[in-house]
Image 1 (cartoon, rainbow, N blue to C red):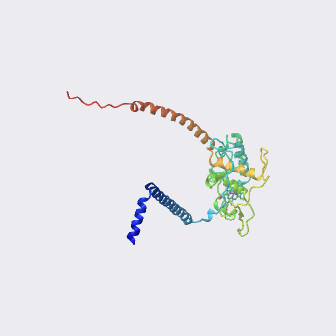
Image 2 (cartoon, protein in one colour):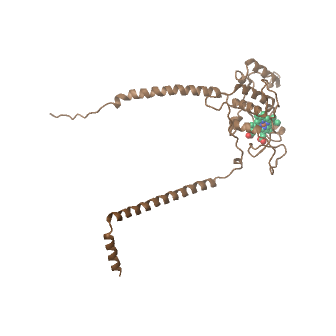
Image 3 (cartoon, rainbow, N blue to C red):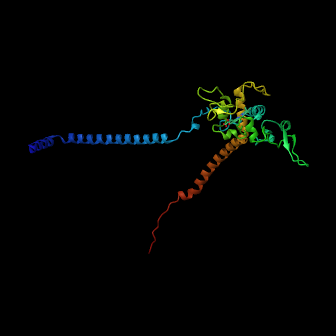
Length: 306
Ligand code: HEC
């Protein structure tokens, strides 16, 4: 019986047109190759995706990750060629002096740094003389107070850390000289912090002397809201809204931590212009020096043994 079936199929196959069977054969192999590829692709995607998900899940979640990140603000000094707004630095200094200096020191900034940035030398001298600075010891070994000089640093509101903590419910107001550089988010963060106070949401318990600020890691900050509309008056008559005060003090703090900001951008641009010119010259010189080597033709002249 088997022999009969075998013989008849053989005959049928022999009778079939060779072209058709070839076609069928190619089609079949093609189909299986494609499905193999699809299977490989799906498999590797699943493995890759699984690895990514596993990697992400293996990361620990820190409480400090659950912080509201400040938005990016369009500061006028943001671009590669933009300088700091010096009128704004000047107003920001007024805000610092009249509001923040009550609690925050800026011990790395001197009065002489203000000269030709936001004031004339005479103005800065008068500014320094308003502050009383401890100096000494004198001939009998006592410390004494004298009016400030251009070379003096901004005076600190507290004598030491302990006094600062005691006056602020245990929280230490950080020195503001480099605060923009010292905080993730820079001036965007400081601005959001100063304008971001609100009532604590339901379920958030604050200790005495703490205030709720969504931008501060943890939410509970030891600094009360410092800026309100019209809390000071600007000498140039700019309306002193809360956001204006915050923006100006941020620009001032940005300058304090990075006084070389404007000249850095200027010299950077100059360097780029000169170097791009030099790049062209260098390229030309390279082509020139190599031209003899690159256009050289080597010919082998067989020695003649005549
Ligand atoms: C009444 C005192 C007081 C005044 C006024 C004040 N601060 Fe503070 N500030 C504090 C204290 C206290 C802290 C520490 C808060 C903490 O660690 O919980 C602080 C913290 C800060 C911080 C650091 C936040 C952080 O991320 O660690 C910044 C920035 C700051 N203040 C900016 C300012 C600016 C700008 C002004 C002026 C507009 C100002 N503060 C006015 C008391 C004050």
